[in-house]
Amino acid sequence: MVDAKARNMKCLTFFLMLPESVKSKSSKSSKKGNSSGSSKLPPVCYEIITLRSKKKKKMAADIFPTKKSSSTSTTTTVQQYQQNNLNNNNTIHNCNWQGLYSTIRERNSVMFNNELMADVHFMVGQSGRTQRLPGHRYVLAVGSSVFHAMFYGELAENKDEIRIPDVEPAAFLAMLKYIYCDEIDLSADTVLATLYAAKKYIVPHLARACVNFLETSLSAKNACVLLSQSCLFEEPELTQRCWEVIDAQAELALRSEGFCDIDSQTLQSILQRETLNAKEIVVFEAALSWAEAECQRQEITSSTDNKRRVLGKAMYLIRVPAMALDDFANSAAQSGVLTLNETNDIFLWYTAAKKPELQFVSQPRKGLAPQRCHRFQSCAYRSNQWRYRGRCDSIQFAVDKRVFIAGFGLYGSSCGSAEYSAKIELKRQGVILGQNLSKYFSDGSSNTFPVWFEYPVQIEPDTFYTASVVLDGNELSYFGQEGMTEVQCGKVTFQFQCSSDSTNGTGVQGGQIPELIFYA
Image (tube, rainbow, N blue to C red):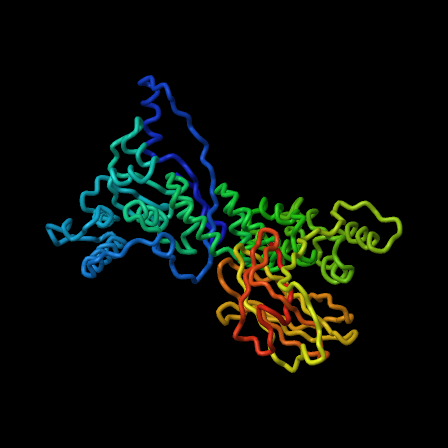
């Protein structure tokens, strides 16, 4: 029924269609004079890309905590039955098994993927990978309006076996587990397919849990893939979260493996993004990597002509004239994807007083404007502090919304101009998330001076992170006073607390690291 061709080893294509038992009855309904009638809807194609991850499964208790059973033996028995159910081989030896469970939820859970009293079966999956799963019409109808229509609606048909070729067996089982057991069992490998199943059978709370799972696991590595999928599934909130990550961590996102897996429409939407926080040469190189992957998907050679052909109009969304001249001369001009006339005109655009007309956008992207969280109300200097002898200044902070820390604002010399060497570091629970070694010049004023990470670091809400710096330079510098434990910056609230890593005196009330520079 479905001719689904894999884009590659990591992609599966599914078609959203009405269940057979609903469609096959539509013609009969019209003969009976049904006023509501029936209409044939064209199938909607969803391309579901499996996320590569080694994360452990997120159990229902992590999302919706449930009360523990008072009986340890009963809990163990339920778990054994449910484990057997996953393998579709559950056999209940106790003739009074109902008495083992104190709640209807627990008794219902025993029926999950169980042949006992099953009155319908589903053949789930594509041909050659089909799995036969048992079901119970009443339970399914209570959990899904689509199943209710299939089994008890005006178009219902008493088929003993229903074929569902467009859903993965693992995703269908995850949906059944939610319907039967009120448990949500998601993993990075199946969450997109489970979201598809929840959308198809109108199980909104499961769909919401899938979206929450995706938002929680969102990072620069998978943001481009999830952007593509969120548009297909019409999840605007997830789409917005993806754009926030892609804009702030554009270079990491563009260099990720997932970027090469996106469709051409998503590619164009990214390339024309005004707020991408990336050098244009990185955008150019990412587009070439995507083109090479697309040639492989189309089973054609990855020649420069073919790369240019598969890029199509997307090529002109790359702002080649906005590159640094060295980047253009050493990379883009020698890539072979630009024509000789295009290369010549762009060189003239860089150097000539009378610039030629170009099909490429010449204005640089605006990127994101960094924001600053200043945690001190005043600053000062004294003859005996603030000194630096290889000791660490450190502070802990937390936010109430996801942000991306781009760097720190630091104080400089209180004795005239001076140059400082700064090793900055950002950690979470002892794990280094970002670090950089750089220099900055202080002009002797009480201003703060920015020091940047190589890439912005993603900061999740409601978790404390440790910001640290080790300075080497002029012995005396300005330092902050009257520190605040809570600072409101736009829509983001920062909270500060002292860090045990601080060995040079910095704390909430005073010291170094007066500013956190971030994107939100």
